[in-house]
Amino acid sequence: MNHPLFFMVLSGFFGSVMSILVKLGGHVSFVAATFFRFTVVLGLCLCTHHASANPSSILGKAKNRPFLLMRGLFGTVGLCGFHYSLLKLPYAEAITLQYLSPIFTIALGAAFFGQKVQWFHLLSALLSFVGVGLLVCSRSEHSGFGGVTLDHLIAILAVASSGMGFNTIARIKTAAPSLVIMSYLAFFTLVMSATAVINTRPSLPSLFELTILALSGGATFLMQLCLTKAYSMGKTSRVALVSYFNVLYSPFIGIFFFHESIANQGLVGIFILFMGLILPPLLSKRSV
Image (cartoon, rainbow, N blue to C red; front, side, top):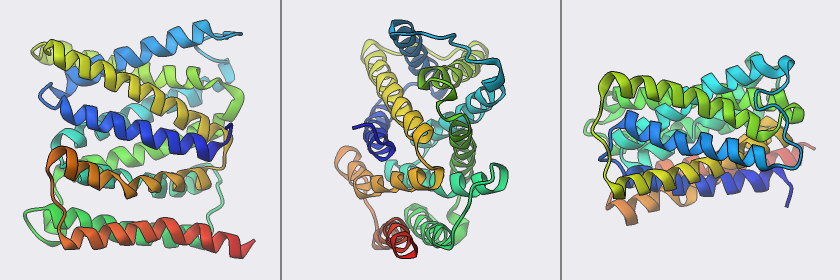
């Protein structure tokens, strides 16, 4: 299938695989894990691009490079922040905070890229914020907004940065191949993580940890490839909302793989967040 929604669902699947592998390799320092992971991603980008039928310049056309650089910068901040939150927060909580991505993508697209926002998109934003807030507060030691920590704020900043990155992909569309767009992201992330590795000099991972990092790098490559294709082909607001389907299984991955638990308040939050996904498509059909 060559449809943006199909690629977005595939991206969610590979993203879940990547998240599990990142969590399993949690004993490796954050900067070392990011460096090794994106070494694999950049290597796969370059090899796949070189092996393609008609390989163009990996730098892309000159007129597209400002947006490619923006994609690399915003995507790097988003991915690093997301991987940081996976290591610092419970799995279900880190993933659920990532569900704010469609909201920021739609809002930033309207503010900076002229995307049209309809009222049911705003309804989705409201329901999703309420659902995420209930889940986060249910998992914290304190109730209410006092339970929100610096790690939560870093995760939200990462989501906002990812939203800008997704909008730059939509702006470029098919003017640059997906592998070229991904190469900018991988290069920025690799340079940033390499600088941190040189300054901190973390201990080297074990053979098992290297295997986990290599596998997570492969999953990251497939996730980003599918995600880039989806945003290049479809409307930003429609494609972004599909990522909410991951809410159906990510909290249960946390339960079965990492022995985490979800309080009743958190389950209510998940339900409200899910309603934020279901209602807008239904209302969109009625408004046509």
